[in-house]
Image 1 (cartoon, rainbow over the protein chains, first blue to last red):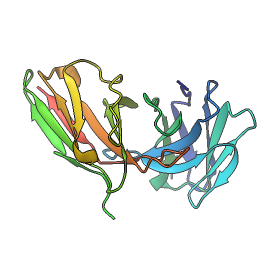
Image 2 (image 1 turned 120 degrees about the vertical axis):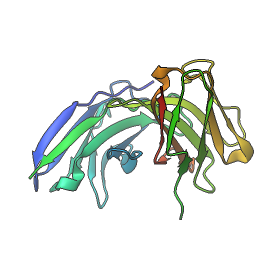
Image 3 (image 1 turned 120 degrees about the horizontal axis):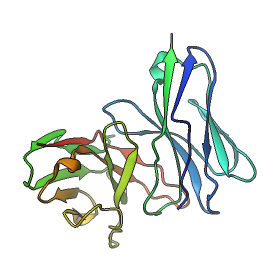
Image 4 (image 1 turned 90 degrees about the horizontal axis):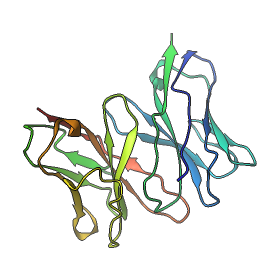
Length: 110
Length: 115
């Protein structure tokens, strides 16, 4: 079971780049790294997923070092609407007992 | 297309009563998950269904909790003899279960309050 460790909270000003790092020392060979975003009173929403190196989509980038024991979610030029809790999840298809952890509460300040 | 839906959105019940929570996954998704989220906490995995295979129930917190999935689609989570500590938001997610990855699509959740 690959548990994850993230900072509990982060603050950022509007327009800045935000990097949230997740540690997952026990990641298994077949595990993927997925990040979710959750707004109050809503279910989590998929942001990005990767296996190694760098992945980029229209919303974020995900940086994964060669040893895969950590990953960094990068949000470019955050806005107030990016205020949410961000979860790092490590697992593979069909894996049971997936561990979301407590996530990182990002607060974007005007 | 339609996303994952859950009903009811809110449920208030008295201690000791049984409750049923429903989840309608995205059509064609073979994997279905139930999670529990207490106020200000992360998601606690409860149970996972994949197609017609027997579910893994190892995340269920007690034998008062059970879940079933009929016809590989709709799922019902049942909590018997509810306790106050069962109060939480219960989230359902479904996944297309593509090989190697498992992007989950979440419903809005059911907020359960046990008085």
